[in-house]
Length: 320
Image (cartoon, rainbow, N blue to C red):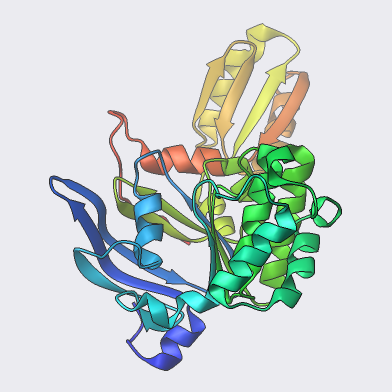
């Protein structure tokens, strides 16, 4: 954790050291360290019950920590009144007055929060609800209500936006629109922390990743670094299945782990080995009908880190 100074925390919107929260016998958050850069879209992922929601609640001052320290936008989480006016948040399912229009609901929030009502048209436009602004919320789909919740989070013109499952209930078009919203915020220098169980969406939109399991951060850093640390592979399918054994011997002779599965051989190696394997197979009189490079996905990395052979968590260090 950087030194506890204004300069350091001004650069990092969220900084935490050994942050913990215990509920009687349950240690929901266990010594979490966070150092989140500014102006990025950061994903926050983990299995159900891993501690994501509790961590977010700690950062927003909704619950008090049992141990450890954290600062949000340079202010200690023990004093949320000092920073919450600069934070926009959507936690779980948003609640609105169903008989009021989307615009009227935002007007209510503006009055309660003493915010600038002139921002309402802009935030409705950002989330794609400008044309439905005057329709009653009870006519909105689940996805539209979710987008209205994001609009509410943007009302304070925040420096930090925390979104819990913002794509919940959205169709593919709505998910794409939400990606564009989050990216546009980051492009304006706003830090976005998004919690989601949809790993493919996190991989598609996020620059940075925090992975939590059993209350512990098991990885924090750029997503690209995490994926590079995982093994890529090569799938080769010979024209004659009787050549599978020969292909396996070729790969193992090159020091590459290989296994036969069905009509293909799977080799753990980087992309550059594909051409070499093709040449070696040709030299051995083997004709390949298929040769494919498979790259590790965020889902692969997630399970590699959070699961061991017996299903327990592994809090191992992953190079970033």
